[in-house]
Structure formats: C-alpha cells, structure tokens
Image 1 (cartoon, helix red, strand yellow):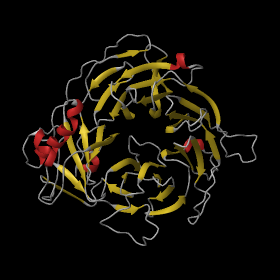
Image 2: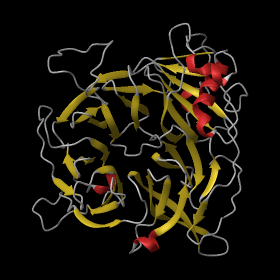
Image 3: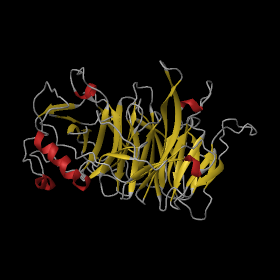
Length: 475
C-alpha cells in the first residue's frame, strides 16, 4: 500500500510585479526555486526534533528568501543577492556559533564566481537589500561556483567550479576584525587534479572511525572527508586534513556517466549514492570503491512506475507506465529523480511501529505535473511508501528537512511543507482514495520490484586494491 499526503502548508515565494494575490492554478514560470536548505543543515536525513525553523530558498531571479516554518511566512528577502544564477545555499551548523551568539548565517554560491555569507538574524522582515558580511571570489577569470559545502563545524568551505577545481575558503572568525562574527573568507588553495570537467557537487561528511586501544575495547573517533562529483563521471573522496591533494586522495569511483548529485548514507555513512544526469541511481561503498547496486540502470524510472502500478492494481508492465493516469487525473509517471534521504519513515507512515523497522535509503522522485513519490530502496526490493500530491504545479527541484517535516521547492515558485506523520493524508490501495487503517510491511511482495545485482565495477582504493565487502543489509 502507499500513503497519499497533501501539503501541510504551501507558500508561493515570488510573483510578477503586477500580481497581488496567490493564484492556485497558475504559477510564475519565470522565477522558480533552484535550491533550498534548512537551519537543520542536513538534507540527507531528517532531524529528531522540530527545533529547526528556518528555510532558505535560492530563486531564479538571483534573490534569496528566508521562510519561517513556525509561522508559515517568508520573513526576509535578499534581493539581487548575486549577479548570476545561485547554484546552492546552505546554513552554517549550530556548532559554528558561540553560546551567546544571535547570528544565523547562510552561505550562497553563484555562477557569477562569488561565494557570499549573509547574516539573516539581524534584519527585520521589511529588509530586502542585505549586505553580505563576507564576499569571496574564485581565483580564475570567469570561474563559476556550481556547488558549496561547509565542513569542520562551518570553518571551511569547499566550492566546486566549472573549471574542474575544488577551492577551499577559510571561514574561521577573524579576530583582527572589529566584527568578531565575520568569517575571514581567505582562499586557502584548490584541488586541481580530482576532476577534468565541471564539479557538480561537493559534500563534507563527518564519519566515525574505529580505533582499537586494547584487545577488548574500541573507541570511536570522528573524521571529516570530502566527496565531489563531476561531469567527467567520477566521484572523488579526499581527506582534507592532509597537506596536499595527492596525500588527501582516499578513493575514486568511476560511474561512467555525468553526475549531478551525491550524498552519504548508512549508520556510519559508509554508503554513497550517485544521481546522474540521465536520471539513473547507483549505490556504492566509498571506502572500497565498490558498487553495491546500479539500481536498474537506465530502466530505473520504468521500474519505479511499475512498482506504483502494482500497488494501484495496474498492469505489471513497465512499458505501460509512460501514460499511466488514474481515474482522478493523477499521473503516476516518474519523470525525474530529485534526491535521497537516509531515514526510518515507518514511524511516519504506519499507525504502528514495527519492531524490525530501521533506517533505510529512500529516494524522492517526481513527475512534470508536480507529484512526488518516496520509495524505500532496499538491496533486493523497491517499495513505494508515500505519494506527495496536490502541492506543486511544476517540477520539484530540491528538498530539505525542517523539524520532522519534509520541505520541497519547485519550478512553480512554491515551497511545500509535508507532514509525514499522518496529517492531511489518506491510505488505500488506490492513489485516488480509499480505506483507512493503513498498515505496511517493508518486505511486502506487493511493493515494488527487485533491485539488480551487486556486481563490482571499476574503482580503486588509495592502494589500488579492490577490497572485499560483505552484503548483509542495505546499510
């Protein structure tokens, strides 16, 4: 069975100048959401509480809006934030601030070649022309910032560029400046050999490492690594604590297809997912540079459609999914993949919590009509879990978590909040409505199809050896 959810709340982020009120059936197609991030600052897994309440959204008119989920309103607008399209926005992590700080900082990267830091806490709701507290410029002429990530508690920024470089900026507070909250923004250096084409995504991740101290005990230490993806089809893993790029290299994954998004998942973040430009998904163990699954390769969207079709009683035929439309007009075609999240959605989507429930990798996908679908991605099975219906009128571009709610942003200029705990939802065998008392097993044979084999692909660890890995759980 699949759970259908309507939005908890929807906000339109921008209008034409002459537009005075929200129009529910149309949207401003010229100004849409490019990237969103929450003050929770982790877009691959949901938080355990509802303490995070701010969402930043980068719009196609080169502005940034700040949305407060506690009141459901846009509280700030940063007009003309950049002179070019904004590639990504991100909040600084909570550990960056001192105990008495009232700052709330975000970082934005743009194709105009600049990276800017904004303090969104010290402005009133009427303020529209903010001044960046720090502006950083990429080193090469006409170099564009395509992605940004904050590591080491927000003190280091990595920026992926269109010149196949990863540049690093020092964001530690400048004690020599009268404004102690101002990051220095000094360019520290760049990785120039990791990729040969545009760096589409950079992602810092702090992972636990086990260090044996005695024969009977082990202690866990934390280590920060940086993953980067590129149009050259490679994922590179580095240890930024090393003094030079050659020593920092940990492993390289060859996906053989241009990449647009990557992320870590698993209890110890040992897994990494890769979304490609041709809407395929693969899953890897990054340390051994080993493929776990190519998740049906180029046929994935058809498999996802067929998985939904089986739950709603349609033909078990992938070829029939291209024009699958329900009686209520819902189109369950999967046109694109949005991203992945590591979470346990069983507590959100079932009236009772299964003792065997555990976190798993979930994929968010969508169609051109604005519907979203969340699938649980187990090693041997794909299970449709949630249908996000009635929120968007165009393609969904990005998502993040704010508290326990899922926030999506789309080409219809809308931010939608989705309460996955059961509010505004219906459960049935049909996407068009049905019975109550929904209950689901993750291993129900009715939900989805098999994930293809876990063969090894080209990939090398730092010492050039292919490491063995046991496959017991999907992470």
